[in-house]
Length: 354
Image 1: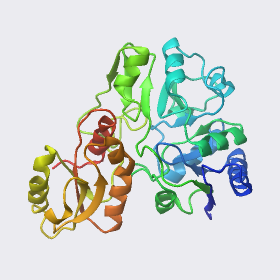
Image 2: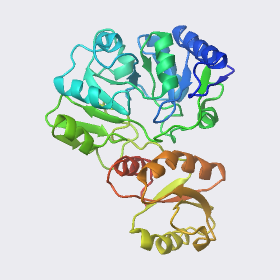
Image 3: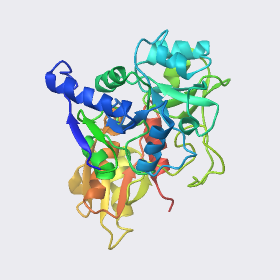
């Protein structure tokens, strides 16, 4: 299979080139094919969510096990949305408030599925994850296709998620029909996944919409604590994508380093020295001079005080150090405030224990 690369400028969807690219991608989706599409979080691998055979192709292309459910993306009005009404049997009042506050955006809601949703989407479970992405290209693609789009991250299962089209092609070139290339993604980590039907509500995966933001809109919320150590083969279908699994991992061994910023240069240097004979890469905060770590391969990560910057380039940095042949990657762990909680979640699931 030749993967078709369709380039779109998200700021110029009115051009002939953009209209043709999105129309071609929509045609592929409607015919049961697979299209990688940009969202504001990461690139997703999309298929018609109502077509069980097409959804099955997602799992085959990603080498994703059937027990890991996928998220469905919709477009249209936030209220009285025909796609949503076809996918779910009930929308709790709290979910309506959250949709009004955060859609379009990086919040996935777990809702009671309708009979129209194939079992493959939910791993046979009664709830389906649904979100309305904020990316203009994703919204226009879904609108033109006229179908909800099932779309987990567009990478080989358990590997580092893609935030550019090149990342997608590194994993899936020749395995999918097309990719819509709209440049780097905004947030860089996957959406928050929330079950609004529990009391208190349950965050299964932290993301750019934080627990504090959710609580301010809809009330009490807790964060799911998965099993430790992380599993690779759970005994039953998962309640949410990525729960309790080693996930988001680079090829290199990822070692987490936790300390206040002022202590990080010495700790990173001493930790790197523990791996003689290895090519060590470091995800380095902007506040630390790379000259302090002359023996390491450096990825200039972002400002330690700006968690949004760290999130945006987290996966790009891990992929870049992999591409440079690093066998060990050292990564400082930021604080848990705001989107920092999502960064810590992804790093914990990607890291190998000492």
